[in-house]
Every structure is written in C-alpha cells, then in structure tokens.
Image 1: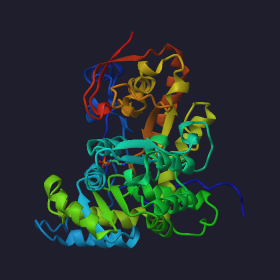
Image 2: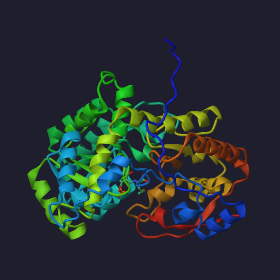
Image 3: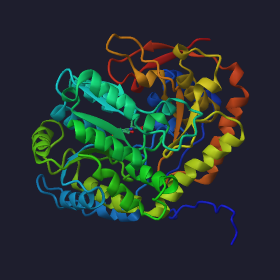
Image 4: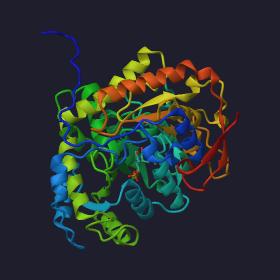
Length: 460
Ligand code: PM9
C-alpha cells in the first residue's frame, strides 16, 4: 500500500450556487475608506472571498433545508425544540437545554446565573463576547492558558491546554469561593483555533472538583476539537468523533454553544446544563432576553436545522474535509515562508501580523492594517484578532495581547480549492510588498466590543 498522503475532498456535491463578483482596485479603495478601514464595516456585496468568519456563514445541506420546511412555528413547545433537545442530549450528553439566538445569548445567561460582583473567572484565553458578559456580570477574567498558546511559532499539539499551576495560583490568591467556574474553550479561537487535550481537561476537572469550582465548556467548536484529539492524542485514534465529543462534555457541568460554527447553521445557539437549579434560573432569565424557554429567540425551523446539523457535523468525512481545507491553505503558506500561527488551527489560518509587518508598532494596528491591505489586494475579507479585538482593561488602557493576528476563517462547505489557491496567491503577493505597508490610526472607538465598529485612517 502506498504511504503517500491522500488528498482531502468534499463529501458533498454542489446543488445551488450564489454568484459573487470581483471588484476593481479603485472600487475596493473607495469601499475600504467608506468602511473606516474596518473589514466588519464593508458591504458583503463588495467582497470577493469572504473569510471574515466561520460564524453563521455555513452552507446548509438539502437535509437541513428540508428540515426548515418542517418548522413547527408554535410559540410554545415546538416539535423542533424537542428534536434539538434529543440531539443535544445524545451527542453532548447534558440533561437540560435552553436554546438561545446565538452563543452570546447563552454566555449572558450563564454569566448572570453564576457570577457575583467581585468574582474571578479563569479561562484558557479570553474570547471577546464571553469575557464581555463575564465583566458585565461583575466578574474579572483571568487567563490561565499555557504560555505556548501566546507564541505563534510553538508547535505544541494542544496549545489550548490550561496551565494547572496558573489555575492553582489563582485559587491560592483569591480563594475558590470567589471562582464560580472556569471557562474552557474547545478549540481556542484567539490562540489560533488550537485544541485542548482530554488529558488536560481531566486534570482541570479534578482540580476544580476538589475546590468546588464548576467547569463551563465553550462547545462552539468542540467537534473540531474532537477531531484534533482523535488525530493527536494517545489512545483516541480509534474512537469516533461522537465518542470523543461525549467524553469532552462529561468533564464539564455546562456548555455554551454558538451553533453558527460547528453545527452548520446560519443562526442559533444554546446553553446546556446538568444541574437543575442552574437550568431553572437560566430558564427564568431566558424569557427576559431571548424568548420562551422552548425557542430562545429561534424559529422552529432554525432549531430543526441545528438538530440536523449536529448529526452531519459529527461525521468523520465532513470533519476531515473541513479541517483538510484549512490545512491545505496553511501548508501552502508555510511552504512560501509566510508567518502563520502553528500548528494550523481548526477553523482558520491565522497570519502572524507582527512578523508579517515588523515595521509597525502594536498601536499602529498591524493586524487591522494587514486585513485592510488583503482586502485591497484582492477583495478577500479577513478579521483582525489583535489589539483592537483585545479592547481596554478596567483602567481604560489598551490590553496589549502577545498575538497580533489576521484570521482567514473558512465558512463550512462554501469555498472550493480554487478559491483557496486564489487566497494563497493573494497573500503571497501582499507578502512581497509588505515593506511598503504603513499602519493605521483609530479615529472612532465604540464602548463595547470595539473591533466590530471602530474606524481607522491610514497613517500615511
Ligand atoms: N465567534 C467568530 O467570528 C463571531 C463573531 S466575533 C465575536 O469567531 C466562541 C469561541 C466564538 C464565538 C463567536 C462565540 C459567540 C462564543 N465563543 O457569535 O454569539 O468563536 O454566536 O458566539 C465569532 P455568537
């Protein structure tokens, strides 16, 4: 048998297409200026290949679309809610389900239920919306991820792991009573889509149990995390993704979920918990923020599409092609000597903007600049994940993250290998003129999650 690695290929064929247009450089210059050099403010119709996010940008299958027609749009007790509940119980293993319109709806609920003002919430690196809700509830986020996660060149296979010494040090410093829970991201988005190992998660669980601290999983990309465990962790090569996902969730008390990622839908999320009291409180609160506890801001058809998405996304051939596509681009960029976060992550390739544009100071916004330049180069939209995303601390100073990244995020089942090739060619061309690139100045800064709406101007 040949030992040569086989190509990944999509386990689906295309039945319906959406036309996209290529713009001229002049059009892109005007569009970018109008958008304040923030790719979030571009109009989608001015974008050629949209790699802003993998959130809600997935292509649904005919099976999911058929499910949309079976939406039971009752105000209360929709059939689709029960289908979703069944699927969450079967694959994630939690007892109780509260649907939400998307992930941050679930983050709002769990933060309000569990955090008291003055509490500390450790986590394996912050995520923007997760931390924002923790802070709104009066908590302070503390990063307890391993140091390797902050180093784009470290080849650690599980850069999402928690540093148990950092967690223990926090417990010693503030006391376990002030730590209601730890948030575990799987995979860790802002570290570059990096996984956490089950060995590490088991150890976190044991330490937390000893101190009465709950574990809340951010399960947004936990299926992708399961794939990395299967590929990299000893003892898991022969386990199915479903088995690994189930085991992952078994080391936690609750999960927040943005279904817009792993679950192959365009909208939807949920909070899933094992504890009746937490469920009851969340079920009470959800009616204030989202809607009745059997729809949580979603139409019946959206819940059906998500329930069906769970079944499709957990399939081996789906995940192999999904992560295979990301690796295809990442490997090509590495061959060209372009600095990216390594190992290649699950949902995105992350350009290392500090290494790409070493001439820029961090407050000249290297990642924001690079994202803007990539759009000018070829109409490809990406996302800043650096100092703009990191926001400000309670004293009002900029948080200065070690990682200054541009995320090339892959919507699931949307783009072809030829799109990937155009992307690689565009980044290569940008890299060859990197010395000519100047930074940006922030001219408008919103109060919350500034990266979404901030505006910039070129320094030169
Ligand atoms: N992630 C992303 O593009 C959406 C917008 S950026 C704030 O990566 C994790 C790990 C996420 C995430 C969203 C959410 C929030 C929670 N956890 O966007 O509210 O990556 O559904 O989920 C985005 P929602």
